Amino acid sequence: MSDRGAILVVDDEPTIAEVVRRYLERAGYRVHTAGDGHAALAAPAVDLVVLDLMLPGVDGLGVLQRLRERDPAPAVILLTARGEESDRIVGLRLGADDYVVKPFSPGELVARVEAVLRRAQPTRDPGPPVVLGPLRIDVAAHQATCGDVPLTLTQREFDLLLHLARHPGRAFSREELMEQVWRHAFYTDTSTVTVHVRRVRTKLAVHPRGAELIETVWGIGYRMTEAPSCA
Image 1 (cartoon, rainbow, N blue to C red):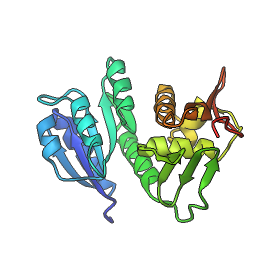
Image 2: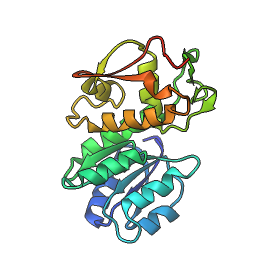
Image 3: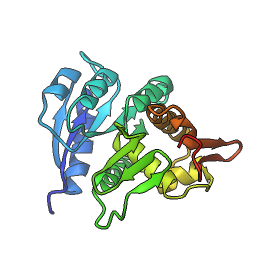
Image 4: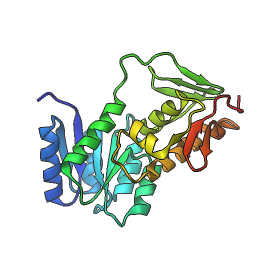
């Protein structure tokens, strides 16, 4: 099977790490493993990290924060226990691309990995830049600016902003955004959408009224304004 990229699996439970490694290798990925936070940070550069939150030494959130400081930063999928909701939300705010709750299906995890990496690949025909008021998204260059200030966005934040900007005035429910941006029609926990919208708004606030580009449609979800008032 062809090489589909490199992945680092970080988990202090050897059985879980081994099962995940086997499934990912069968899917065509090169896989490295690490059993603690220090080993994870010393591992070779990869395209994506499957990261357990509960780690000895440097915990998962500490590893995630340091990974996000790298250039280029890898995509990150968190592995969390059911009782770790607050840590999961912190992880999303720190820039995690997705999460999977233990116990999980290895096949589902492989599907999540494929979806995250697929979204990170450049499109063959990106089309012209999307411009709405002070917001400009150059898809080919994978760069967004607001008021001529470059925005530092994770892959998922860029995808979310681009999707909304390509459909100005249309209200999307969180479930629709989960399906169309995250590509997870079966994902029932849509809190990650709320967290990512909040992060994108914070970054758009480099312009005096940039955060108002994304409106909350009460009872439905979110939409991009058709005629941004922050022009």
